[in-house]
Length: 327
Length: 269
Image 1 (cartoon, rainbow over the protein chains, first blue to last red):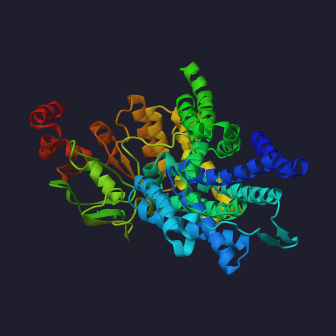
Image 2 (image 1 turned 45 degrees about the horizontal axis):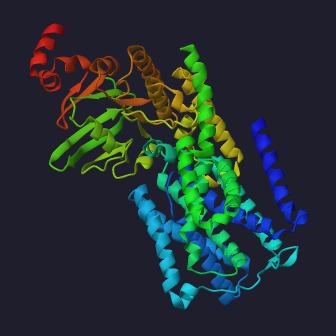
């Protein structure tokens, strides 16, 4: 491993340990709430980054997968007595299956068709949640979700009663999810995905089947979004159609664009920063999305490509300098 | 003396046809390419050269016709499947993965053909590490052969236009294809680099790779290819060694225009 790589994994390990120690140092519920929000959004944004940043597919469907996971987990836990873990896993699996179906059907046309279909899909999810009253209980949703209990092998039953418990649960899942995505994007599968994004025809001419890689990223990101939805919803204690709110999509997109599409660490970092910012801006809830918009435009003007794009340009400049000097 | 046995047929094209609305871009084109050959395809603008490449490589669906590589049917298959079967094409408007290093540009080009699956790639198995090490070694050697070694770890965006053409030829070699179709490999390239590209193609051909070369630069094709096919309006109007092509009156008329043709024929003869 290179020195930069060793440094990075050291820092990542340190950050994970520090995050897990937070509840022990301070039981402050405000910090824990921020932490839960960070863990949830980090998973959603990294999933979107996988689809948009690596294979170049603009997707609005993440929030649909998130909500499908949430509803599925809640219904299975309440009506079938499933455990939260099994419910979230089922929710993620269903979301992935749905993702593969809409991906396969629309990507045969074009990546633009996929963007439009993903947007329609997210809107459709909200309509179904509102109008399929016999299943989802309609616009009022299902309030007062029970305190879930996880039965963990070796540990026994873990009742998620305190905010700290949800913090541990979502943080653990976020670590697992990010490890999985990291494993994929740093493997040569990630290289083929970037090839598809950078030049799809060239990739095809070299034997890369773009559809297979696109479906892999859609399926994996849908699985993770659905699972995190299945966990997060028990922290909210209510599931209603607002789980499909466009606010989630906007936040995810901003995190990915500011962090730099295709930059694993950049997006993770911007998810951390932007999870804290909305609460800092809480005094001006109405203006929040406006400020987001302004920040987004500023990023696109000043550092197009976000944090990751800025690092990339520095790398390019390093190679261009000696060339310019020698010629 | 008995003639030497003909080399085996590598590519066989039968009745390739492609129409765009009223225009027939490729009109019932049939030809075959022998193993080890460098075949040039020339023709005036709009004669169907590029459409032929696009059809053979699967990027444009053909209306009629079948084609086979070493007897295996390629017609109707996807571009990536055709590439994995051993027919690799390059593009007129050179393409590269700008943000990737040159070495990564090359490694992508062979990763779908080395038989290492997704799970092995995720698990970083010994088989994967061997395959990747082999790809990097071959990539390094190919970069050396096209004179781009010093940029192996640089992003492809730093390359000049001509260097990108060299990179694309090197990339086309990575998966050890049976046949490489180069679409205008020297268009817009300076004379020094043209000689470099000529040398690279000859060297690779000496290693047993067959080429089809689509070009506007007639001199380049005439000096490099032992056989030239001339297209006009999507049909083959001549096929043979360069010397014969040069003096074929139909070719001169079609390709160079009737008045210029008589001048050139006079000047050369």
